[in-house]
Length: 117
Image (tube, rainbow, N blue to C red; front, side):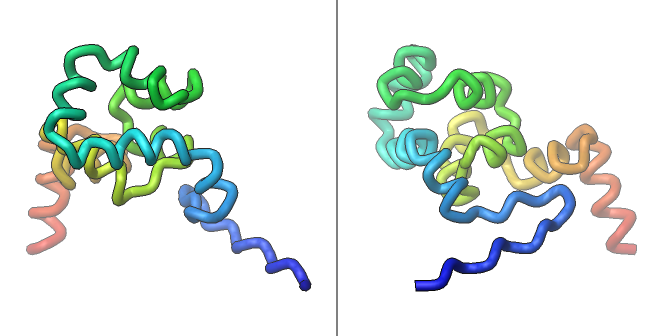
C-alpha cells in the first residue's frame, strides 16, 4: 500500500496527524479524564501526582504547569481535549486567542473590537 504524502507545512500551525496523536496520547487521555468532576478535583488537589498517573513526559508536564495552550498543542494535545483542561482554570477562547497572538487578553479583546468596526 503506498504511503500518504506528507501534509503541507503551514507556518505557525501543527496539523494534528498520526505523529501528534501518538505523541499526545497520554496528555489527551488525561485531559479527557476531566469530563469527571471527581477527576478535576483530584487534579487540582495534586497536579504533579495526577500528571504522573497518566505518564506525561517532562515537556508535557511543563506545558500543563504553564497553562500555555500552544505548548500543549506542540506536545500533541488535541484542541478538543485541551478545552477540558482549559475549563478547569476558567480559560475561555479569548484567553487562548490572546496566547496565540502573544498578547494580553485585554489587548486581544481590543483587537477584536477594532476589527469589528
